[in-house]
Image (cartoon, rainbow, N blue to C red):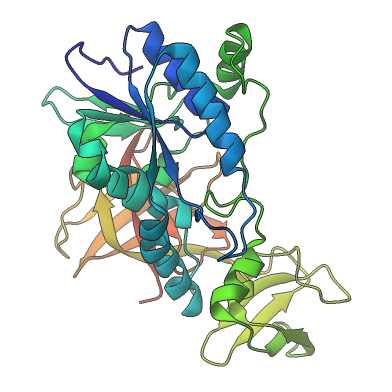
Length: 368
């Protein structure tokens, strides 16, 4: 775990899950008593909006943990900031046919953004239960680095942090495997030692993602066409309900079907029986607006040349070697060593060094 000096003040974001609970335990074990904060995203009045999440149970867990360790707990309401910033970002991206990642933006705009504006600015460090590590090089530069647990590593969710946010971030469990975190929780009889990990998008709780999209974007019927034959397979209710590479939940007979392409202007989705049609793979694509976490490793200049990196475009344990080339005007070309399934505009391509140890940052995949 990153060393924390005795004179540094620490704010810990406590979610009610086992990861942040063990983060609290490890900090206290070091003699650090952080002030704990529970970020409320769901609305206070659930009659105003359809909502079904575990926030009450989360807060109960967080309260019990703080009582046990003698730490102060404060609830910080970021509901309005979330729905104004992250929801607006998500809906605009989906409406225009992109594939956004709300959890990535939640870290930048809420956990290390709105929270810092409201309470975190008074602390030297903000600690979370993310699976990630940091290291400082010989020149004093702080880098975001991967967790030893390749399955749980969350550097991809943190790759859009601003430089100043990374400077304040500390990840007490980032050096551990998930099973070690569970073991520490069990050995110390933490109240949520056996609580299941949350799944899906952090702010939705048990709300179905399509219901969430329907609430904001409605429905718009369009054609679903088999890409190889041009045959009409059926009707869909809006291109925003479908993502590139999707198989489940499409509702068309004669499957299995996979979404391989979308025509946003005409509201058409293209399907294929095979998961592996050539059209579903890309080994070369463009990214723009790279967020460099620590410093640019490639200048934004068409004369800057290329560098070897590793990348990933979704939350998996798989990395792919690639070449990053600057084209100028904030655009870079990615040429991967192998074709990648389901590359879609709006996704973040996360950039790492060739050993996929240091995370350089991420850029959004674009069509042009």
